[in-house]
Image 1: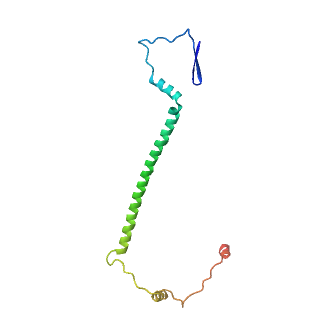
Image 2: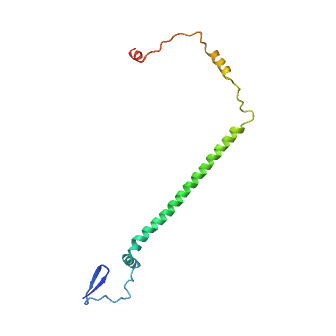
Image 3: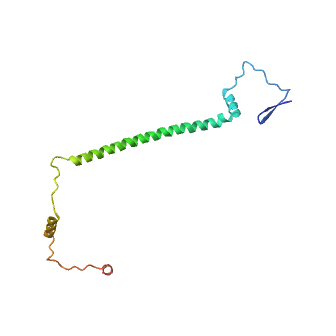
Length: 136
């Protein structure tokens, strides 16, 4: 009996049982089994490479998404600035003879208020206290 050591596992083979000779009807080795063996021999290929590729491609994808949202925000900001600038331009120039402010003085305003309010005729009105309004 012979022992073959491969890494951590030990395989035992019996000299009385030998591997059958390949025949024309036997199926060839599947490529997936060789890939599995390759992944066992090199764990970086099985675990490290997918992890690194997901990290790199994820970062690239996120950068593309962020750039798109920044572009959209910039376009919206530009549109808002255009609206503000047109409003400022319209308010500065405005329509011809659209707005003429009146030249008023404080004295004129006082006379207008005195005309509305007559301070000579008045009557006393009692202002109710808080506890008086609750009791009534």
